[in-house]
Image (tube, rainbow, N blue to C red; front, top):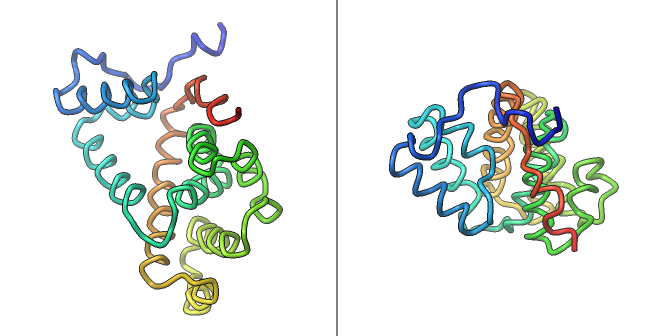
Length: 192
C-alpha cells in the first residue's frame, strides 16, 4: 500500500455530503483557497461540536492582530509541534510558515533546532518561552515573563505565546492519537 492510499485517520472520516452545512461550507472555502482540503478539517469533522470549538479557538489565536506576526505564530506551532513529535502539524504549519515568512528554509530550521535557525534573538526568546510552556508549564515564573519583556514582549504577548503553545499541544496529541496524515501538498508549499 502506498502512502497516498493510507487512511487520513484511524477514526471514521465523514463524507462532505454528510457533514453539517456550516462545517461543509468552511471546508469548501478552505478547499477553494488552497486547492485541497487539509486533512485536519476532515478528521475533526468526525465530531462537529468539537470541530467548531477547535477552529473558533484556532482562529482567535492565529488570526488576531497583535505584536506577534502571523509568521511568528506559525514558528511557535512548528517548534512546539516538533518537540511533541506531531508530524501533521510540523509539515502543515511548516508549509504555512514558509509562505508567511516568505522563506523556503525557515520551517525546516525552526523544526529541527530553532536555536540555530536564521531568526532574530527576539524570536528565539519567544520560542524559548513557548517550549517551556509546551514541556514544563509548571515551571514558568516571573523570570520567564521578564525575559520576554527584554525583547519587547508585553503581558498580552506572553499570553498569546502560551496559548498558542498550549492549544497546539492539545492539537498535537489529537493528531498523533488519530494518526492524522499530512496532505502531500504541504510538503512542497512555499519552497519555490
